[in-house]
Image (cartoon, rainbow, N blue to C red; front, side, top):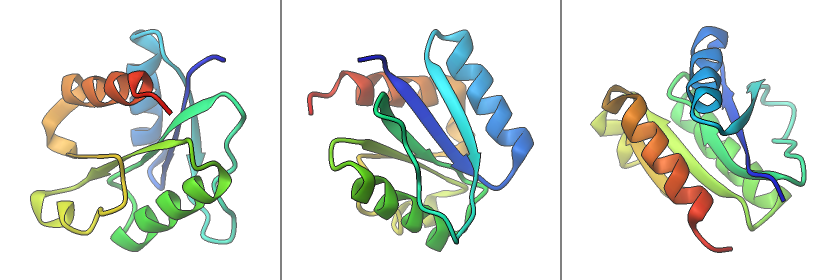
Length: 117
């Protein structure tokens, strides 16, 4: 099984930037613009779902819930805009602040991919 990361958000530029960071580091990545009418649709080789900081707290929670509903084996990383929002990201496997940067982002992704099911 290949490891693929699905990134869900509402800012296309930010989604593409995060996808590029992953791909430069050898991780397959796909982006989806958030649509509250649709659930997260992950392929069988998706390992990690990222809920981006461009989403509201409620939308990030919806992404986490629909990811786990699609497959309880998925791991979720929530990227929050600030430390205040960190508290409302419960239920995710990992949480980081957007300003922590690409190195921390990649560290979380690698940790989640390596984590056993």
